[in-house]
Image (cartoon, rainbow, N blue to C red; front, side, top):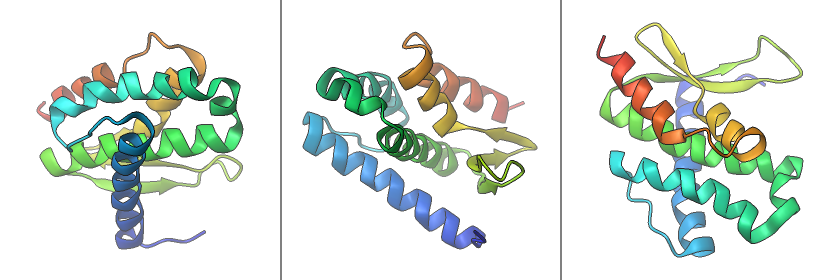
Length: 137
């Protein structure tokens, strides 16, 4: 699937908006696009499991949850620091989107996946904060 950078950016902006509206409708919690709101994403990701149990861990759900919140966090980073979305197809069976800035790539959807599926102790906010620190070096 070939996508221009503008199309990919539009997709990620729309996905971030989806995270905001979905979080409000599902959990009555507002994500306001601020750096401070990233802390809420850690709780919201686990709230999906609390509310929907095993359904939240089905492939389609995992894909959607991780991508909308990864886009949300990535868009906060992009608006604050900068960067460009990149669709990495180096593994045809598992393409993914990263945010590139300053020679580094940030897998925001990937860290959401780690928290949701592998280890609830992994912090999306910590990853975001480290990305912000790295951007200033």
